[in-house]
Image (cartoon, rainbow, N blue to C red; front, side, top):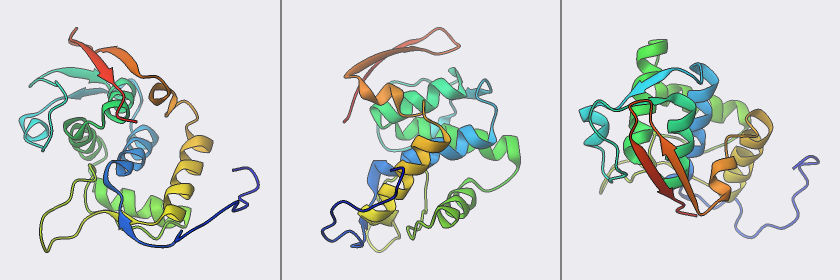
Length: 172
C-alpha cells in the first residue's frame, strides 16, 4: 500500500457490481463530514431498506459505532441512516459526496446509493473494478485506520446510545 506497487492483477479493470464494498466509502464519507460522536437516529426509511440487521425505529447510535456496526454486518439500514444523518447535518447530497470522493481518489466507479444494493433490472447499480477497490481500501487505511478495526473479528457486541445490545456477526 505504501508504494502503490501492483503486485498482481488479473482483470483488475473489469467492472463488476461493488455490492457491500460500497459501505466502506459510505463509512468514510460519514466519519469525514460528521462528528463521530454525533447521534444518528434510525428512521422508518432506514428500516424500509432491504435487509434486516436488528436495528429498531427511533434507536439512537453514536455515528462511529453505527459505522463500525454497518461494516461488520453489512447493514443496509445502518447505511441509509448514515446517509440521512449526513444529509441532515450538511444539507448536501450524500451520493454526490461519494462520487466526488471517488473521483479525488482516482476511482472510476460510479455510486448510485449508499448500500451497494442492486437497484433492479434496467437500473444503475454501484459498479467498479478490483483496482477501484484497492484504491478505496488504501484510502480507508490511510485516512481512517481504525475504521476497519471491528471487521477483523468474527463477532462484536455493540450497544446503541438507546441501550440496545447488538451482537454483530461478521459477514467477512
